[in-house]
Length: 364
Image 1 (spheres, rainbow, N blue to C red):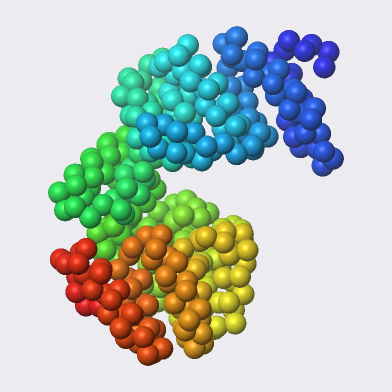
Image 2: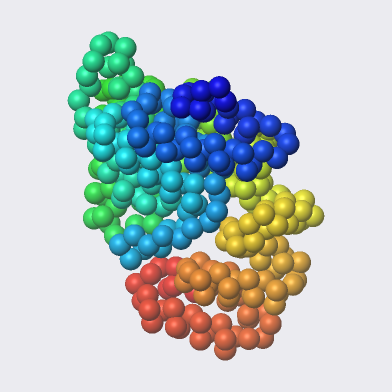
């Protein structure tokens, strides 16, 4: 307050306001606007810029939809302000890897995948420079950018069906793993995590579990994503006890993690713990009413309990949103049990006409 032009003091005071238990939102908003204006006009140390970016994204949560190249992205006004601040900073310091990495992560957060990958690629391409300490820092940033890129490519791989395109993405991921082996080592946590995820994408479950378990231990069994992945693999391998153990560890870390709650509900459903599964699904759907995995499990639970029409209604809703033949496989027997074989046949025939070569459709 004594020196309103001192950006570091502004930031320190803003953090105090944000930590207050009482509502200081209006004062914090005004302080953040002044800080934002100061940063645009002046070159600052990276930790000040990045703290301001975090404050913008945290404080200003007004929802916004933006259209980029014909695609709508849901974001917040704070994230857009943070992104604008970072872009202005990058224009002034185009080779500063830490800003490019942060910019890529903001793009990823908004679903702008290609934009995120482009930012991460710039981090990876810029040569290390400066003294030994600065070069070590640059190397760490490049490792993070490569790891983030590979994870985005792995997510893309999930939705790609074309064999040649899948191979192209797989080769790119493998190339990044080789890059990380050179930059870190062959048994590093990032290498084991990516190698395990790639094995999982290739449906090599036992091999994937070995690598991902090792990576999880290297992360101190404190990485929620790896605990959830290994729990899912254990469930698919029929190792229910091991799956439950990992989920229990995960729930201690992140009791609010929806993915863990859905996985727990699926295990409970498979173990015929129907009341527990219903409770878990109710908690998930109260927070995320459109969660497709939770809705599908709810339909399965209703079918088990004989609530066939309710289950069919959910399957219809999910199928109309995304025409996945696996949903028809679940729905058709229920229609038959309700003496609606004609409806089941019409659905199956319509799907076959659209996808005559799909194995899932052929066995309907």
